[in-house]
Length: 408
Image (tube, rainbow, N blue to C red):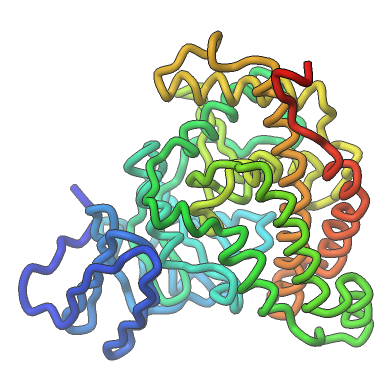
């Protein structure tokens, strides 16, 4: 009943175990893969390959699906992952609202699979093999939907049977408890000592991404706006380095983070009365404070951004207390003892200082997308909103100070 291809035991042209920061490019006929995650093997035989991570074999198919005319390509993929489906019984649904990829659902009877077609040039900012590894890890650790296959420009995976959270639900304290519990679960997933040394904020978001910002955009008007916003890449890099010096003082622990916790990436599962997170393409080891700060920033929305919706301190303190309580329970501690007012107040300081990093990171992301993406979204305007909000909040957030016992 498994849809995973079995590992190849013989006739392997390539069989290599990769460590966390080991970058290897494997080519054979039409197959090419770049891998950067721990405990991954690549098996290639003939025109077929398997990516084996965390003990699970994920088949690779050397086909590409055109987002503009997705039906033929998706049907061809479904012949591999759902060979029992009849083409005339398959119904398709396009999931709108994404600003990185094209997502289509395919349903036959009660079974649904999702096919994510990667956005143009998104490999410049997203390690797709790490994304697949993240999906497999969360399936094993948290029961998230399984991965069925990956292909030339996308991935096919299971459907979480629930509904996306609405933006206003983030303020609901009963829903807040469910979200806090799921985030605590994710942050307590075991990661390697090597990953802890390389949080994505420093190793990717504030280094490699800045290098990918184009010198000019397709229109002169947008290029002028971009240069007015950030100056030069060197100026932007200096600003990020100064911010990082403040963040280092917080000693925020490195955990497995989602890094993109907007309401659309949260699914309420009614049968389980719980919340699960989807879309792990930006996931990986990062500072705990980044996920917390990013979550609060996303209260403003993405379609019609309104930063007056950023949660006030009273709400944040209530939410952060729930998060610390859920974390304590997962670790076997008594939350009545381990969670006090000082711990909550200090986490508030941590989350809001890292919120500045979130604004800067997503501003950089938007400038890269403005050059390459074909989706209908004003990325330059979004970059302006995020980076201007960074400067608006900068002094107030950086002035926040952690409490000590003696300061009470």
